[in-house]
Image 1 (spheres, one colour):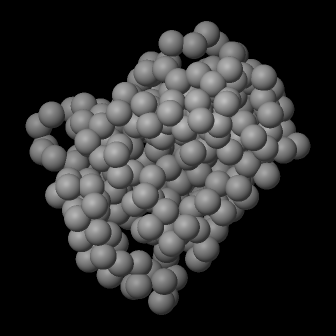
Image 2 (tube, helix red, strand yellow):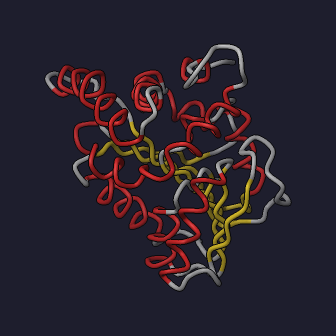
Length: 245
């Protein structure tokens, strides 16, 4: 089954989505953190903190952070949860290089290890991790079902998947305000600061197309997960999903 966001690509309709997403994030890595915090007015930091707080009662000795980007979620998880090992993976070497520098500055490079991985074909053995996390990356998966099945595969029985994703608000007036902001302000600021004319048009389009709430809950169950719950933050601008293997 295909989902609408899988057909949205940053640059053109012909090249595979994964290749285009890698190229896009390599190109905007230098400005990604600044734009992330600017475009969310810094609220994204609170969303990450709340999500990691929800992980405290769950097993988290060994964590896999998929689509780690520049490592913001991995760093916060490492400080708060204190896992023995955290594997931070992404397809974009440009983003991970920024993350490696941040982790080294924090003195956490003995715990957090970055490596390039395809989310659809992870190199890790079955049942390798207590928790698998994705923060603001799952809507970029070229094949959502396949990526979720890989997350399920590398989880230990009783382990948890934790997904934090940007979502488009559904209720008046936030729905209308978000449409104006995402279609006018985000592309303009993104183009000015990242120098990429397409990235910050692509990103809000995937937010609008991505399945959310009960629909995403059903998709997680189809991938094999149980005990799926979700919680919306800030009028539905971001949603956290918890699911157990």
